[in-house]
Length: 107
Image 1: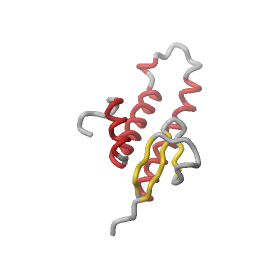
Image 2: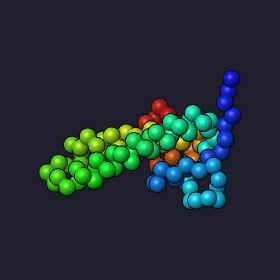
Image 3: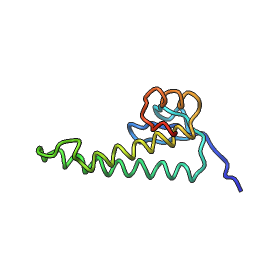
Image 4: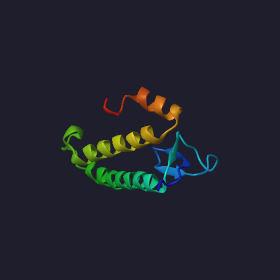
């Protein structure tokens, strides 16, 4: 049985997901099931946690960015977020993400 998709409005910078377009600022409109939204929320939660790890790691000046596991984790998760938005997003969202050139060519 297919779950009903609903419209959601996403702000990647804040990790905010809303079902109301006028409740806050948003960048992407998607159509998603409850399960898909749960997956997206989990990715935002992971990145929130990783941001705190990065904050504490930033106070260790001898670790360079490109050798930092937490930054790699954050980058990977944000790429997954954009992959989901691309998959579920409207044409405007797809066009914008394509213009960012953030996803692997297989998307």
